[in-house]
Picture 1 (cartoon, rainbow, N blue to C red):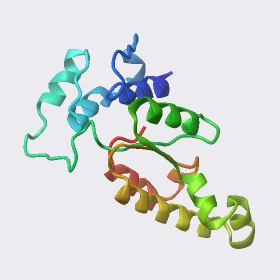
Picture 2 (spheres, rainbow, N blue to C red):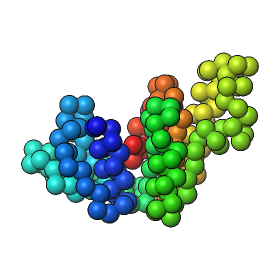
Picture 3 (spheres, rainbow, N blue to C red):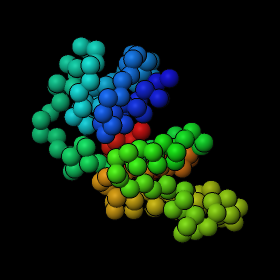
Length: 168
């Protein structure tokens, strides 16, 4: 599955000796994936030659605020996909912190469904976005961050995620 290959490719930046046997599985949904990984994270892959040439054309003046191997990893995906489980395991292996944004939300505001029932989805999404922004600001390095399954439902949250790399 292309999503698993992409997830493990990003984890390969931190965990050595991950092998993806069929790298071409991402071509249908994200043909630039390997070039983007090289461009944004400075990673090297045994990628198809046409992808490597794209990565070589990246402007050398582009600078990341943190070294690629120090930047926090943000996990997104459908509810129940395993973001918390995978995130805890990756953080433990790396010796990094782990934050689950749903757990953080509930520690501050109570159960998510209670907020939704009392104030609606938009109130929940606004608070969720504020927690995402705060977390990316205060934990921009050496942290695995698991987002709630619906984090990508608002344009503003998607823009915040787009501005951060890596997002898996």
